[in-house]
Length: 507
Ligand code: NDP
Image (cartoon, rainbow, N blue to C red; front, side):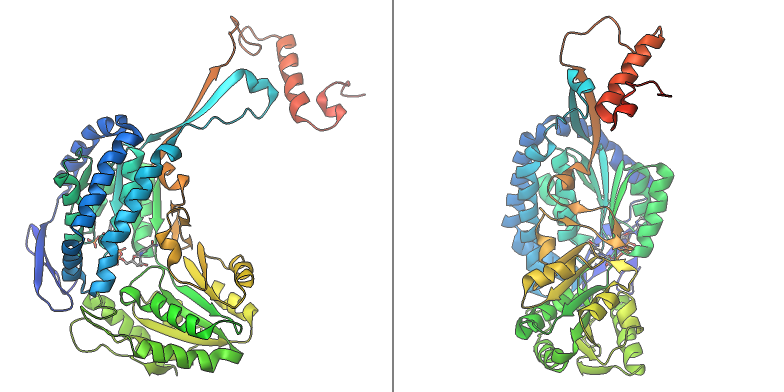
């Protein structure tokens, strides 16, 4: 619980971190309430699955329409519980609408039965099918940084797959999730999307009832979630923290690099898992790049009508201040920003120069509007330092030669690389999004795999030809039957005449 939240026995009071004003309240669901909600969803799920992808698409596109029609109000709700600027908040409902349309319209194609070819002629008498059946109940647990768009990334593919979904948003920002689920109910859709609110214990209760758990949040909580899922033997996906590097090469367009990195690091006040959090610049362009970056960042306006907003919590603002203070105490220079503004939870957009790799601003997730920069000798040093992190979410490379950027991408130990751009992969559901190393397990999106992950795969074999009364390997076992079966298996798989079994063993 944060300083801006207060709890009575049964409710959470949500406040605007930028102003301290009360924005709303939500109930704290106890484990029994979560169990009852889960049971209702599971009961409604078979009918939802039976609608098929085309029937589900109808409801999902209606829901998308509701979200787009109510985008202004949703934006206000988002601002009221996060302190985001209007520009940052307004992206969330529209990006969610985009994702819903993608999953709704592609589900039929992605969920279609596959008919793999037999690997050996022996099995060509069979028809093979891989069918996809949804997990009945998918639990989705989300953090506070994108309270509408984060459910918007993970809930639509699960619904499109035919699963029911129980959503548990962060205690800090539950009001946007209320809107997310309200839309589904207001269009009169089947009762397969539920909401449960509360603290970590409510999240734990969701895990108790889910058949698949999709979690987005910190690496520390993700580890606890993985243990709880392992105890229940349910599959899970974890989208966790990051410390994304940006590499600026000497041949880069430095204006674009400075503009892109400023946006990639400050969007949503840097409270983005894939924010640019550390920058490595080749020595020949270091001074020029740093000057351009500091100038760009120095012009960023904060506030509801500005470019970017407040931090979502006091605690988050204090982490950012701590990282900046640690860096300056160890010799880093603040080129712009460097302090809380003194209003609400705002922290001034900050550029730090003369940073070294061991400072906490380079090793730990800051999750704030800071851009620490390091000078490197060449691309090899940049890659080495970029990879020297327990995190592996994503990275950016800035170069005048995009082929070179793509080559460098393959040397980076991260789940996504944007060349001469930032964050763009997140908005493209055809691409997989997932962290390597301690940044996650599994992937969201990624075309067909983004929806199939919410399904159990079922292998079906059936005869293509009229069948015999018995088969070679069935009882009674005979030496001759076994010899024929093994000879055929060897013939179609082994290399070398001797291994075909056509010559005697000792021959
Ligand atoms: P947390 O890990 O603190 O919380 C995430 C969610 O888990 C919240 O809903 C929280 O509820 C819930 N929770 C807490 N304890 C438990 C538990 N024991 N069992 C089940 N659920 C629990 O993350 P934050 O909300 O602080 O979010 C910031 C983090 O999210 C950053 O590390 C960021 O990098 C990461 N993130 C990763 C993304 C990705 O795609 N890789 C995208 C966005 C953010 P409550 O809030 O009520 O405690």
